[in-house]
Amino acid sequence: MDIVALVPAVVGIALSPLVVASIVFLLGHRGGYASAAACATGWVLSVAVALVVAVLLGERLPAPSEGGTDVRAVIEVVAGVLLLGLGIWQWTVRRLPDGRPRSAGWSDLMAAIGPARAFVVGVAWFLTNPKALVLSVTAGLVVGDADPSVVAMVGIGTAYVLVAGSSAVLPIAIAAALGRRAEPMLAATRGFIAQRGSVALVVVLVVLGLVQCVTGVVALL
Image (cartoon, rainbow, N blue to C red; front, side, top):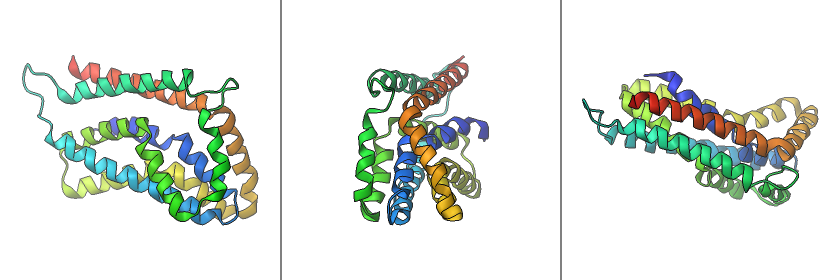
């Protein structure tokens, strides 16, 4: 299996500012550890389920035949175009005049939710995240196309989920390890996401979109 082909999906899902921001803001409230852990759990489980579904889809796609169209390559090109389109949409529609994302107001609501709702939020952020869904499909096609053994698939899938979900778990681990000393770091992260999160997301979407388009076009040629 071409492990390198999984890198764009892993990095793109890991760099999801909204779920990271949710967890960081939850950690800033009293009793936030339980809610933050529940939110991260919902996100990571969603990443795992999406990969399984995408792998099953990839295994059912026809293998490229001599002189025929490579369906997987076409999907990669389409995924790249979608990511580029999402980047344009994020830049032109989802930003306030000062550059902040329009969804920034939700941060004030984080203090009011408990673990059960936080878990639902983690799942919802994934299901309503077009970038994560598109990248999950492309990752599943890579794994399904390679058709690895069960042991290899479990190992690769576990590593994929751990790395893709690491950004959601890392703030909790840092807060638990450092205690109150982590607060300046969390505050700085909250400030960065509020001010630059939208721009960072656009950059990620454009880079990933170009990578997927180039990969798909090369496969077609």
